[in-house]
Length: 242
Ligand code: GLP
Image 1 (cartoon, rainbow, N blue to C red):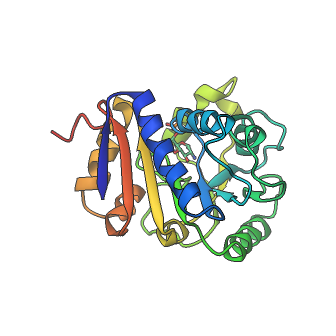
Image 2: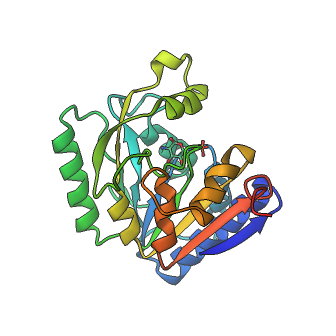
Image 3: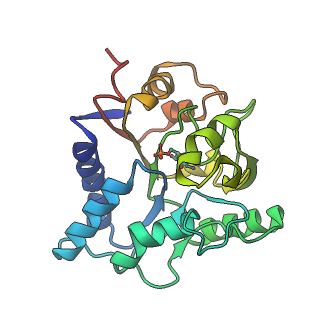
């Protein structure tokens, strides 16, 4: 694991965007695994800026996202489809039809998940997977559990995740209770992983992920077994690293 210490959120975002843009420049037809949540927004903004300056070209890039709420229509402003469109897709030149997310509008979980697995296989796997970190150590929506998950599956969100994500919804009751998420095995098969973390709320989970035991009770801890992990975190998130 390589840990990059950033001064603050903006510095973290720039450093993360640098790693993503290096991937796109070195392999223009790469597959980027993308993440939602508030943490990567600054990195996406930076990528859009570099794209507008002519320094980045996404014309051969394919993207697959980590997860999607089950049951939210795509035009719901809290769906991850909507998030990705607003924060990245509508601003850059990723070809139409080359950005994939699990289909949250598919009520049949088995269908939704096997279709998404099929897509990930068809695009040939992930070159660089971007990850945020849940306060309980979740990655994607892989919640603490007694085993590590394999491929895309439907999850019941934990009370702590519902609590953490309610800030994006009008009221807590509006937060969907289930989501489709890429599995841990798929994440671990990505050639490179870039985890971003910001703020003191993430400090404990980040410390445990890097220095604690590898356990499905803290899903991000599995990254200790991945050969190419880059962690970009700000001072607050790294405050328990000593
Ligand atoms: C959500 C997402 C994760 C994300 C996490 C942290 O539950 N499913 O992919 O990493 O929350 O979000 P934030 O970056 O807003 O703290």
